[in-house]
Length: 399
Ligand code: PMP
Ligand code: GLN
Picture 1: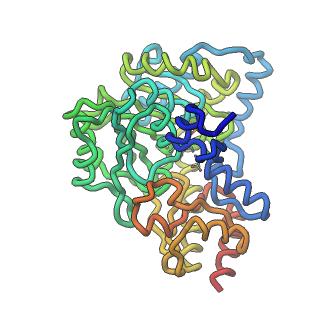
Picture 2 (picture 1 turned 135 degrees about the vertical axis):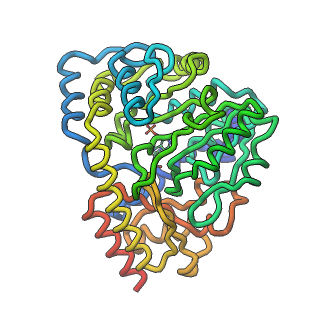
């Protein structure tokens, strides 16, 4: 088969294969493979190296023993949809209707894909923050839509009013937000969320808000869900996942909540992507969502300590380190070390220092600021021992 077949051209146009039609591994897969090859401490791909809460793990084992091994209901088990609604009521004060306003998906990844494919037609515009999580650009490309970005500025990675106003306009069909933000670790200020909501409402755009790090906001700061912002309520699909909150990234249980008619549209796509998934994990995630407040606080505080450990180590090694206010990640700019191209530097760090990271430029368009090109994303969702070892190796390289 030739590489110029139209399906190759379409996939290349969406950035999913290279010009010769060869599959491009995601940056996460590429850096993790390199980390394994060089026996590096892997602070690249964002997955924890410690298991989640034992009662959640036991509930999955128990569910398999009980025989919950066949297709679950299309929208997810009733017990999980109720647990999602009760968890929302406890932490946010709203309670989506488990029957009509909640859909369980195969991770947040499927929730994002099904939402975008349900809402977009070729030529529609989708606005995201930039940098952005990698699957956003891929799905926008697959849908044949146009990707417009709001640049995050400063070392606290916030949007600004001119950026928001320039991006969201009459052609905007979807505003795809991510807060707390991967890859930058920023938590978007409520005033910016309000402006985004007002612009989306003025142009009748749907907001899709990816909030998978909702429980990982540090330093006592509150988390502001997009659906709570006036103007956004009623036009927002909120996405979350068990992956980060319960340290079970391999389980792939996510969910999307929102107005019944929008959820119906997402169901229409989801049923032909995966139909359903994760039968024995669904009751286990329901157990997790019902854990006492202390679980969520302890998990967040343990991560905050590791953020501090890694941020200090990166600073000692000579990086300019941005404040991480949430998520699993911290951004370190290698420009003070004389580095312009973070992609080449990230590969060298794996080989020479034995530490893997992700170049920030993998999450941004080529037109992004030079500081995006020279920066690296490091994950601190690792054991103290792993972070201490990484810091020791980085300091040795810095001399
Ligand atoms: N959105 C963001 C911002 C993420 O960081 C991730 C992965 N960690 C996902 C979506 C995908 O989540 P899941 O593993 O539940 O598919
Ligand atoms: N979400 C994880 C990260 O940002 C990786 C997920 C993946 O490998 N696709 O590191």
